[in-house]
Image 1 (cartoon, rainbow, N blue to C red):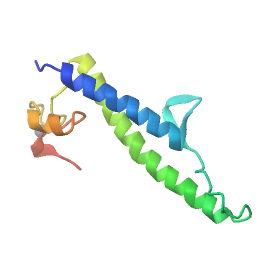
Image 2 (tube, helix red, strand yellow; image 1 turned 180 degrees about the vertical axis):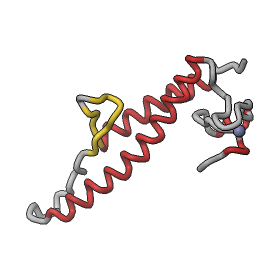
Image 3 (cartoon, rainbow, N blue to C red; image 1 turned 60 degrees about the vertical axis):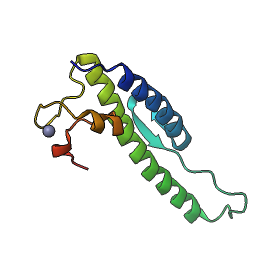
Image 4 (cartoon, rainbow, N blue to C red; image 1 turned 90 degrees about the horizontal axis):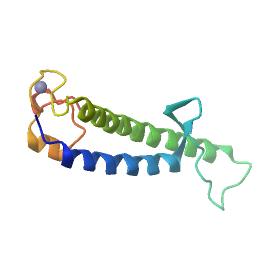
Length: 118
Ligand SMILES: [Zn+2]
């Protein structure tokens, strides 16, 4: 079995960083802590209060950023769960061990190089 100590500390640090970033563009859904909702972005001081187009753009930007962060956050959480359950470093497609250099590049990876999806 893989020594996951180093990966776990990297993943936990990334989890904390992602939570900080998520909290700048969104807030946790009170009824579902795994879900995050986008916040309207701060509008600049020069923005015309009657101009709602800027606010809508800001909201859409936050939604896009939030979605990326949330995807990554869930990958990191998934990897931490696999460490707890002893299935970390196993390709979810082939069941083979994931290469060490692949995990070094992305500790949240859940597929080997042959089954890279994105
Ligand atoms: Zn594979």
